[in-house]
Image (cartoon, rainbow, N blue to C red; front, side):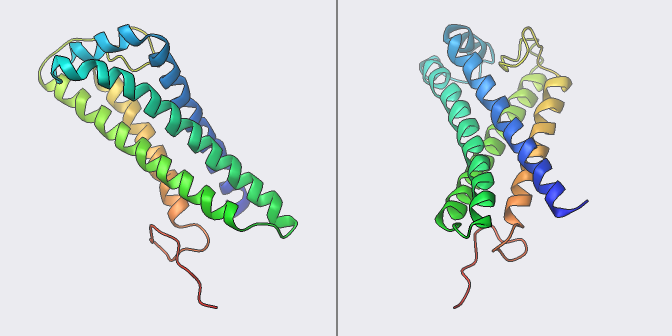
Length: 178
């Protein structure tokens, strides 16, 4: 595939992933008591941390999803600006925004998978509280879904790290010598 088609695919996938996290965060934010109950049923946190977790996680999902979308929109803006010779700081900020959000999304998904695995190992038959599907039981389907999303986020992160202005495999931009 050509580089421009891969850039388009990664942008569409990145925007979709950001939208998915916004949707999940909104669903949990609009039903805070139900989300707190879903967290409590997992029996992994002390009672005192359930409310805090129920308050923080929806906003974490919302902001990482929103800033991931902003990062990809900045990438599109850089593409337009570069046609007119105006790119610069926008490109660096967009790269940092996308990579940071993708790391946070991968950490969230890794945590979700760990919690689901622990819950399955403990034999609890509970609703996952994912915010995407109602009455979805903890099980291999939820783990597979999160693993797929983790793979997508990892692929996007890899594409960001191997992008222009960086050495192969480098996680941070390499400054060019004048």
